[in-house]
Structure formats: C-alpha cells, structure tokens
Length: 347
Image (cartoon, rainbow, N blue to C red; front, side):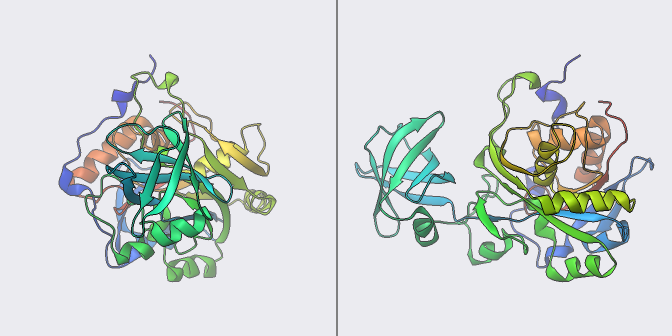
C-alpha cells in the first residue's frame, strides 16, 4: 500500500520544542542509530569524533542565512511582514507575505525602521515579486531580522545573529539554517580533521518551503519546493577519494543529502549547479550518502520522510518515541541524531 502523510505522525509535547540554543554548540545530546544494533545509543554531540573513522568524509552545507524577515506596513496602513524567499537580481526579490488581505500589483509596503518602500510587482503562486529602490542585499542587512522558524515563539535577539548560523557559513542565500550544522564549533571540526577526517562542502540555499506542510494525504501527489544547489567538482572528487580509501560519506544535515543525491540522479555523481525539487521518501535508492547527522524533525514533514528513507520508517518512529520519553530537545535549536544508513530500501 502507498504511504500516507499520517504514516509519519508522532505525538510531541510542546515543552520539548527548543526555544533557544544551549550555551555551547556541542552541548546537545546525540542519539545514535546503527542498523546493526537493536537499541539506540545516547551520547553527546562532542562525542561525534568517536563515531567517525579517519577514512570518512564530512560534507557540510556552507550556505549562509540572510536576515530575511522584513516587517513594515502597507501604504494604506495595515501591518505587513515579508519573508524573502530568494533574491532575483539586484533590486527584486520573491517573498512570502503575511497581510490581512492579498496584495495587488503596485501596492507599496513601507519597511521598518525607516519606511523604506518596496513595491509589489506581481503574484507568483503563493509568493509575491517585489521591487526595491536599492540593492536587495543592502536592504536585508539594514532592515531585516533573523528568520527564526515559526515554532520558535519569541522574537530573535542578538544571540540568534550568531547561533542561527553555522560556523562554516559562507555563501549567503538561505532563509532557514541547515540546523544539523549548528552543533559544530571550530574546535570540534578541528578535532575531526586532526584525526584524519576530511571535509568537503556543498551549497543548498534553504527556502521557506522547508516549513510548508504536505497538504494531501497521498505522498505521491506532493510536489516539493525548489531550492538552489551547487555541488562542485572538488567535492565530487573528494567523495571519489573517500570511496577509494573505504571511508563513509557523512552528510551533515538533510540539505546535504538532498544536494548530493540530486547531483547523482543520473546514476553517477557529477558536479551540479541548478535547482532541485527532489523528494526523498521511503523506497528511495541512495547513491552517495552513507551516514547522516540530523536534528529531530516535525511530524508529517518531508524532512522526517527523508530520514525515514535512510533508516526505515518504523525504526525512526520508535527512536522518536524514545527521544520524547527521554525528553530530547526538538527541531532547529534541539538535539541531534547520528544515523548509519540501512543497506536495503525497505519501508
């Protein structure tokens, strides 16, 4: 029988949704799932090097989160909030909008704090195209706020400027953090590299669609949002060298999985620079990734389905039930998992 959205549901007490990061990035807990072991193991994220081999390759997403949330008011007076999905040239951006009534072309929104005007050009599906009076990146840096996810029920503060960003972020473009990477600090990366673990990078700019729920019951009918991806020839070569020395490709986050498996959709991994709408769910045949570091994801989300494809749906749901029982912290600022991929693709 086909899998349904409800097959990926679980009960999560509200109190377990992390609202703020821990004092230190590596303080989070780490649940370890190994298909060869019946029980999960419980570690700390700082223990990650002990789970790696000197032959392994860590693949990081080097995207940088922009200050994508813009608050203001319509020129007619009502409140308006824009979430920049992606920049389209120097002075245009595609945005999600929160307003009382849909905007019409020509409507001006005045952004806080100085009433900087942006003009709605056209409706693009669920989003709006806006024109800015100056460089979009400059406006974002001057007027924007850290785009904390909707389940973090507080306004961003100064600490979020650094903590909702990985220490290896370089290429700006995301409106949500690749959260598995938030657990690393420079010292932990250094420990991994000193033991011989290599590091490679991809870029996947996370869009706001990562938080959009699946609306229908049938997964086969769902169409993923599109995100920008870049997998370099250097990273492809590093993965080939990892294979030759018998190491594992360890993806730091579901965004890395999506990037690498997109680049291998033709059958062989090759450099890729473009858009991906890949939907990884149980039954998917992985070609690149051997192990995964990931956070705990929302019920019935596409990210939960990706992880279920990696380790098995029931095994994952059992692990989540144990995480709830042991009061792990969930979602972006929460705890993490280290998962070795099961060798078959059974549901």
